[in-house]
Length: 131
Image (cartoon, rainbow, N blue to C red; front, side, top):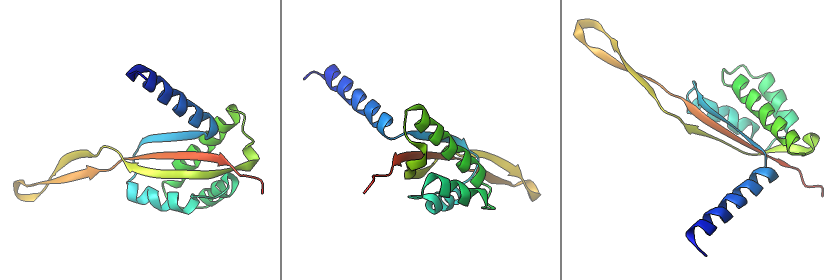
């Protein structure tokens, strides 16, 4: 098997995986990953409806973008032909994005560094297996 044939095969495998498990990705969210992970851990493994309800009543700043992301993943699942009543959050993870850095002038000619952190959030949904 040649190199291009292997690449083509991997591409087809990834495409099939995306069809099977719908996902949504939020990039460059202006909230620290540490704060976003608290919410991600709260909804991991939950039904989509339950997760949306939890985020709706959460008073954390990252709840709204995460709620929108889960709704986006649900709409993606609907477009792929999945039953939206049967979905749960299979995987959710938060990675650190690039940091915005600059200097803030302080007293006596000093400069303090300011670091604004960003997050990349990925949500992967799956259908529940009927037992």
